[in-house]
Length: 559
Image 1 (cartoon, rainbow, N blue to C red):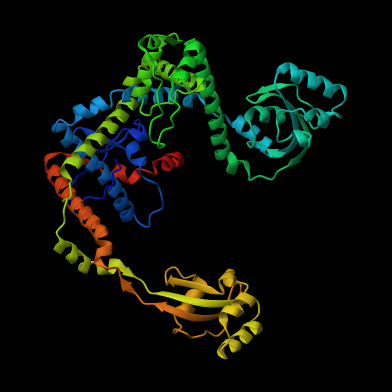
Image 2: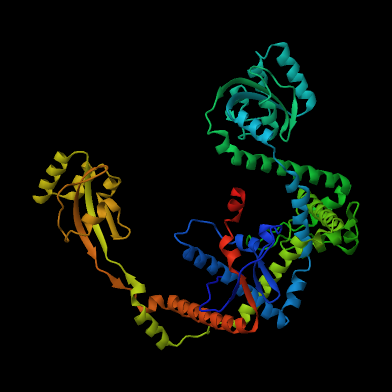
């Protein structure tokens, strides 16, 4: 459930100065304590967007608004737990610690290892200063590529265009394999590494890519102007780190696949495909149909791995329990699903071996998710607006907030825009003598409204284009303006119609009013509930830490 929170009104908090040792990580510093729950700087900074503030008072107010929302959630979580709401939620989150542990595994074995050195950044910067013009020939097998390579070397690449006609790359085969100009970071990593090591006119030896076996030649190169290295450094570092993470993750998963030793029985898989009904789901949200098997067919083994044996019946049971039932109507879909499930279990096992499910990060994240769920249930139980709102209350609200339902005055004009003051003066005189502004606009205007015979509007003052607004709202109906200058030329305008301001009728805004009243009731109920809980549950805020949150990193760097 999506939750919307606001600052609570007039709450009394115990404010204490923070006395936290310098060895404590910034993100782990305690910002507030609600009962036995804590809110750290890291929790706060995930919600707070740093920005300059005109004054310390405004900064404190903005930060307190966010912190109050977080305190409100913890108050509801503590109260909800006292009422026994945690038990059912813990059942729903049964597998969540494992999921969080796998995320932590990713951080430990992938992200933390993807370190970027200054030398790598400088090398990348040097490569970014060069743009290359290349061509290539893509082959299916290594043998095919080596044969093409020998032919190219023998003929000093004079036959490149001819051989490129048989390339697997349909986009370049008719253009002599031409890839055009490219710069560092704008092509596949496999090609990029080879391309930027090649000298001009040299031909690469065949190299393997995800598309096949490739042969590359650099036909030309040129320089590219960049900002100074110090200004590009951060972007370069992020790019290299992202690439390293992708490679490390891919390599890690490939090792897991080999370790899993998965073997598939394609005969059973093909039987599952045949037994899957071909009826298409009626909507995108309806799960795809599952194979219909006999009891004996269900006992057939679909796959084996280091973890276990998967029968057809077990596969269907897994698919039924999945949050979104996977399609099992093709061989590839079945293999992908089985492989994904086995790899996921291996990741969980590895995370458990590293005791990551017991790590402080996982425990904290799990607690936060659980608290949010409990708070949501508590709010659902106690912050409930009235189902029905009396007609008299709707009428009173409408009268009290009538300006909210006002439809602003709209004005419609016809304009003619021309390049010179002399031409505009002539049009003005013609119009004053009774000329038709529609015909003149259609024949002479340079403005985009020419196709609409100069019609601009009807629009409210707020939505009227700025360069025409002042004139449009100063004219009387039927009045023609004298020529006035805008950035695109000179304008003559006629005010053709005025739609007076009016108010939407009550019947048309009843639903909106009901929602407004319910939201106000919900907010009032919530604030009353928070006020009561504040008297029952201790809340402590480290105000000094609050003021430093969101900007501590830079200050520490200066020190």
